[in-house]
Length: 213
Length: 213
Ligand SMILES: NC(=O)c1ccc[n+]([C@@H]2O[C@H](COP(=O)([O-])OP(=O)(O)OC[C@H]3O[C@@H](n4cnc5c(N)ncnc54)[C@H](OP(=O)(O)O)[C@@H]3O)[C@@H](O)[C@H]2O)c1
Ligand SMILES: NC(=O)c1ccc[n+]([C@@H]2O[C@H](COP(=O)([O-])OP(=O)(O)OC[C@H]3O[C@@H](n4cnc5c(N)ncnc54)[C@H](OP(=O)(O)O)[C@@H]3O)[C@@H](O)[C@H]2O)c1
Image (cartoon, rainbow over all chains, first blue to last red; front, side, top):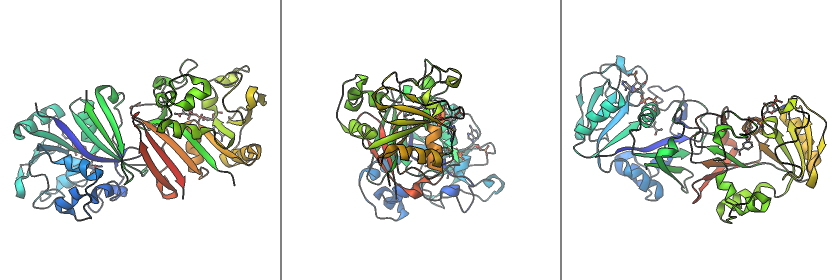
């Protein structure tokens, strides 16, 4: 069966995957871009059209796994837009006309709307369904490829808590955010069902991989 | 001036330095010994008389910094004994007649008692004083050597929050405790005053060093 994977989920040392005060001009709240600077410096990011130097070292190797073999993404309402996007019928996500996903994307929301077909192969579907059911839908759409759970932290945590994730890649960034949304809450003893490896790289981040035993 | 250092402070991925339910038969609560298994395998631990294989690799190198150049320790009441030790006039700490500290140790407590001279150079002094004042006392006793803030997490956090720590060594262990006492609470933006390095080792832990800029 196809695997369920999380990639490039960046957290602070104190475990926050996003800051406080998310808004249209601050998608990560007071965290700003600090959770993702390690990624902006990679060739992966450069090749995605994000600019930067495009270094091809270890951070790139981890980052580039993001799209490999992925046939669909599941994301939360909190990733799809700033608080209140549900009230804006014209909101089509942060990522412009040609989003980088290039697959079906299932947006979990309690206020679903009709699907939106974007350029480059991305279609947004809006789904009010529990994790296992959403996964079933995404699996069907993924055509035998893997499903990425794309975040934010609330959705990743929910999928982990239900034992639905096969591979989790978390990138720990050496900052202390102090407030925001924590990834690890309520996941006591997660290590029992995963092999966990840690790799710190010269950029200062630590890549944690959780592979289901 | 002599430096203030923290060493071998072990935390779970979700930031807990001790578990829930500390008691006489469970000094780390439900965490058991899992936060320190990396250390039990080192030559440092072996040389301290703790048994084990005594491997001299990277974990040992970090662990052995613990006593080097230290002239006094400051610890919290929560490290000195299980909840309620203050009601037991015979309690003399977890570490027997010859504690491994071999220096003056200042135990911060709201219920101080007379000093206790132990074997091997350790004397316990009990102090009800704010961090800066306790540090002044410990510095006097350290005879020009460094002062170690030995934990637990509450005391380390308090000293960090007051900007009193020069060097912090935290060891992140790949387990999720889910509950206990967190190290990082209330330390937003700590990275601004420290250079932070991360080194993951083959045992699976990641050593984080914070060096004051
Ligand atoms: N650090 C990283 O690498 C990373 C990665 C991705 C995103 N982010 C950031 O994380 C933040 C978003 O994360 P978040 O934790 O706040 O939110 P989120 O996980 O994106 O979304 C959570 C929301 O999705 C909806 N939802 C979740 N499960 C549902 C279900 N089963 N059925 C129906 N609706 C469901 C609910 O919203 P409603 O009740 O409103 O419908 C819920 O509040 C953003 O700031 C984003 O930029 C960070
Ligand atoms: N993970 C590690 O590497 C590591 C290292 C050391 C210890 N530990 C564990 O951590 C736990 C203890 O940590 P903790 O955070 O619960 O407690 P702690 O930091 O050891 O002690 C906190 C307590 O010390 C007293 N105190 C602190 N500052 C004071 C001040 N300025 N003046 C007077 N009294 C003061 C107060 O107790 P009172 O009000 O009761 O007097 C306070 O509740 C234990 O389970 C221990 O085994 C773990």
